[in-house]
Amino acid sequence: MIRRAIGCWFVAALLPGPLCAQTSAPPITIELNNWPLRRDIALVDGATGIAHAATEAALRKAFEKSVASADARGRWFRASKLYLVDLPTVALSHTLGHEYGHGTRRRDIGLLDNGFALDNWPWPVPFVDAHGTGRGGINFFFDPIALGVEAGGYEAGRVRDLKFRDVFSREDVDYFSAAQLIYSRLEEPMAAILYLRDSQVRDFTTKLFAGPLDDMRAFTATFTCVRYHSISDPDAQQAARDIRRHAALAVLDLQLLGSFARVGNYLWTGKAVGSVPAITFGDQHFWPRATFALSPIGVARGGELQWTRRALSITAGAEKTEQGIPLEEVGRTDRGRPILAAHTPSLWSGHATASVGRRTFTTRLDTNFWNQAATGHGGAVEARIQRRMFSGPVPAAVAVSAGYKSAGYLAGAPNAARWFAAIGLSVWP
Image (cartoon, rainbow, N blue to C red; front, side):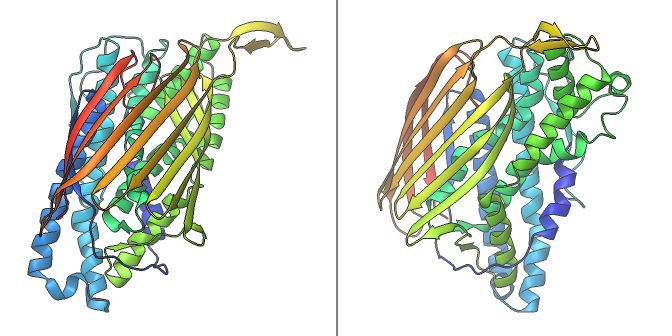
């Protein structure tokens, strides 16, 4: 898996930036809802927030002078804390979400989910590997429904994008949320870049049955089989090169680069909360990024832009999907090689999120729309209202959400048409 590979990127980018500070920390949120994957990830993130707040409070009390000191002693202390406490916490949370994604998609197609086992703890390297303990029930290399199971782990990162939109809708960002974004946004493109190199997919048909494959190569194998009705080294290598090329563009992400700077600034200055680099015009901030995603319906690539101005934040994005469906022969080349094509319309998806934050009220509207081969045109809408209910030294807020999606694939949602409802409690430590 990819978790170990992100380390070199993280360490190389921990450089200070010209950022400013803020006194308020992000809230700890516990949310219950009726969509299994979103519920599981919300509970994992809530537990992670509690663990982070507790360790921060304990360390601040025990080492008050070192936590925020801008001298060499303070920097060594924060670097040690980041390595021994913060990054392991983020890594474990990230892996739990990844494995819950696999389990949810297995249950969606009627297979038993036997859970998963951790291969290591996040020490001395702050990355966690895990494996599913039950993978039987379908031929994973020749059945299209296997695409959803193999891509399900990466799906957790896209579910967390709603949280990151809220984080960047505020003027300032805390270093811990920035570290979470780095793990989430780098996993999928780094997996493709490292595991789909030409040397990794050479003699692919032999390696398929030599032992367990990582998620990225297993998805590529299934995608190749579904598209070409069989698997051969040339076809698998071409699919791997296409996926790797699209994935490499996904590192063009200003929020990702800004998150590296935010963590680096925390190490250097001790300011836990501060602004992140953005394209700025007056009081308007823009964060563009390229997007890449594996899903049960294929490989999606596109772009997204988040814009904020004071209390208003709008995020919009669109993606084109290379569908994971069988191709049909429509002709042959001069050398006799079949020409394959999919007889489907243009396949795409898009999304938009708008939020307005006030002192006591925050409202958010999420919309998604798509054209998918299996279900045609469809979409989803969700509205969320949050109100601060308590003030004082530990303020709190209650949020309620409701929505509906039509039949089709949406990250974090069941494939069938379904209503959505959620209630959450946020506490500012």
